[in-house]
Amino acid sequence: MSNIVLAQAAEAATNINPGLAAIGYGLGAVGPGIGVGLIWAAVINGTARQPEAQGKLMGIAWTTFALVEVLALFGIVIYFIASGG
Image (tube, rainbow, N blue to C red; front, side, top):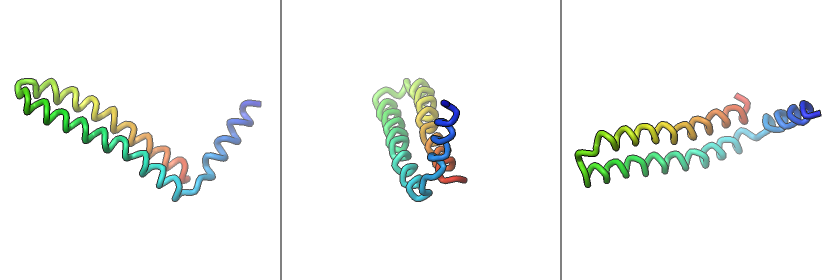
C-alpha cells in the first residue's frame, strides 16, 4: 500500500510547471546568497579588529561557506528533478 502512495507522490512531483520550479529555485537561492555575504562580511570585520586571527577566521569561513553552498546545490538539483530535466 505504501509503495502506491510513494509512486503517486513521485508522479505528482514530476508534474510541476518548469516556470514555477525556476521561481522556486530563485527564491531558494536567496538564502545561501545572503548567508555567503554574511560569512565573508564577518571575516572582514574580524580580520580588521584582530589581524592575527585571520588564519582561524578563514578556516571557519571556508567550512561554513561550503555548508551554505550545499543548500544552493540542493536547490538546483531539486529544480532539475522538478522541471523534468
